[in-house]
Length: 127
Image 1 (cartoon, rainbow, N blue to C red):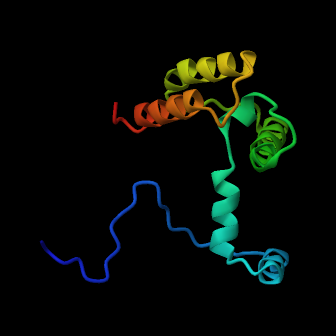
Image 2: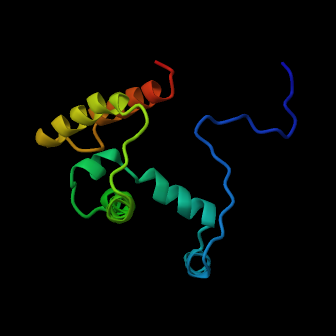
Image 3: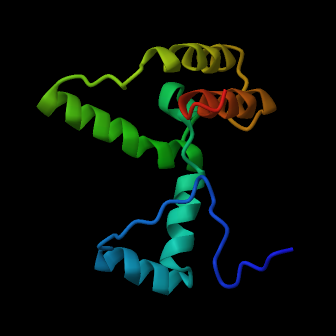
């Protein structure tokens, strides 16, 4: 077995970004004894397509996802509607998520996880 040394294996979902974090955010992280990376990861893992399409209430998933709705509303007012490239790839999964919402099946269900997993595979060309 070949040793990789200090090189970390590549994670397909990991992205390296440089952010200019606001002082408020950094102060709250320090006050809460949480690293900025952990704070951002905690926020990101609570973003759900389900809550973008269906209001699941006012829980953490709803709050994390609300930034996308605010951006969409502001962007639409200033620049008009914008459609995803290859939008036809998104139609079937969105319909499936809406069906889950109509059946009162939430974003923590295995059915939802399966839809998201298959959708991701489709849009990344792995299916």
